[in-house]
Image (cartoon, rainbow, N blue to C red; front, side):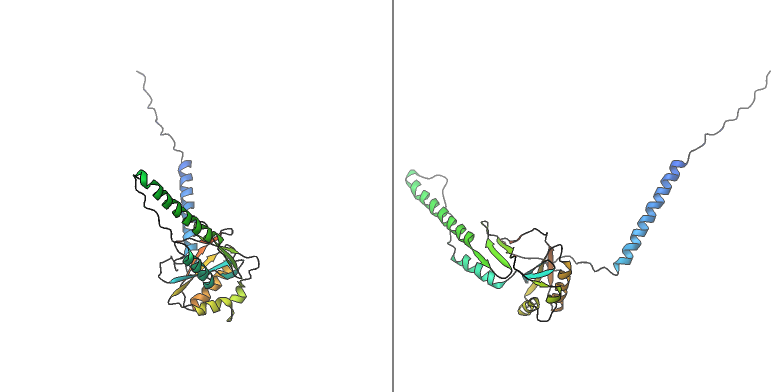
Length: 233
C-alpha cells in the first residue's frame, strides 16, 4: 500500500498596504488638527474678539465710516426737518365700509373712499417732495416712508488724523451728547476699518457704549419707519 504524503496547507498571505495607507492618513489628520489647535491657542492671547451684541435703551447716534473717514448721520437738524413735515401731514381715517351696503348709501360710502384715497395721495406727495441737505448728505423720504441718505460728492468728513484731534468735529459731537442717554453706532464700509477702530476707541474713552454693523460698498443708508437701532457691543 502506497504511503500518502502529508500535504502542507499554507495560509494565504495578507496584504497590509491598504491598512497602512489608512493608518498614515489618520496620523496625518491628527497632526494637522494638533497644529491647528496650537495656532488657535497662541492667537487667543493676542486677538481682541468683538463681543456679541446686546440690546440697550439708550438712543443711537449714527456715524458712517467710508473712504477711511467718518461722517455724522444723526444730524439733529435733519430730524427736526422730518418731524416738521410729519406734523403737517393730514390724518387719513380709514373708512369703515360694511360688507353689505344698501343701495341708498352707496354714494355716501363711495365719497368716503374717494376722500380717504385723496388724503393718502396728499400724504405721499408731501413725503415725496421732502428734501434736505447738509454738508454730507442729501436726505429724502421714499413712498414707503423710509428716510434715505445719499452722500454728497462734496462731503469731506474727517480722516483718521483729524478725528483723533482734541478739537475734531467728531469729538465735539460726542461732547454734546450724554453717555448716560446716548450710544454711538457705526455703519462701516469695507475700506474703513482703520478709521472705525480709531473712532470706536475715542468714543469708548469718553464713556460711550458702541455698536456697529458692516455696510457693503454700494448699500444705501435707509432707515425705515420702525426706527433706527444697532445693538451695543
